[in-house]
Amino acid sequence: MGHVRVGTLPRTRRWGQVVELVGLGAGAAQVAAAVLHAAGRHLAAAHQDPGVVEAVRLLMLLPLAGRADDLAGALRGVGLAVPDDPGLVDVLAAATAAVDAATPGNRGRTDLSDLARSALGGTLVEVVGEHLHTLLGPDPADVPRALGRYATPKQFGALAHEFFARFLTRFLDYHLSKTLPLHVGPGKRFDSLAAVERLGRELAHHCRERTLILRDFAGDWWSKERWEGGGEFDRGRVRAFVYGAVAKLAAELRWEGPAR
Image (cartoon, rainbow, N blue to C red; front, side, top):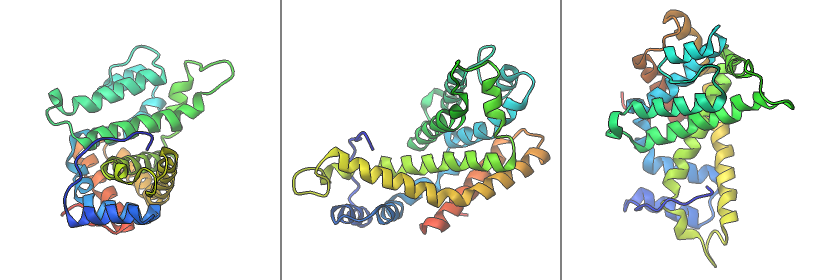
């Protein structure tokens, strides 16, 4: 929440409740529940968004590419335009471009796809990137090794948890940015931007805890689909996975999930 997006706040009773709760000093859990009550249908449509599906598909494929004999060739094989001996920045740039390309000409580009692309990038930088920090600088073999370590059910579950924690946090941030400016200033809920940042950290922690339920689900699904589908991860199947993941989050956070 280090930035504020200027947007129009919907004039509905549910959003009025969000404004009221924030103004009354509600904690992260209450604020998150109120936002999802007001905007949950937006998140429930994630499985129908081609950008979200592509981001999750790449999340599933990258660890397997790291285990391949030729990282660049494996990445190109799944549609990523990378140079020979790609670094993490090359992988990140190619993955970002692939998510954008899932919506040709940006005609179908949505807020959800932008949030998923950002969550994918943050996951790669923070989770995969932490294994590239060496005193002598990254070795060419470090990138495939760092990606490949997530090619087990348990480790992929941890990777998926990181992605969905970031995705949910960004979703809440996106929608709260429409109401937080109303509560910043003398005599209001937040007397400074630092106070807004504190709420942001609390929300991020809340999202990280609530998305823990996806670890085993994601790891088991990835493992089963890897063997049954030959590691291809068909977009239709990935769409079904996103549907299931969001439905689990809906049950965990008690809001209306995707329609059957």
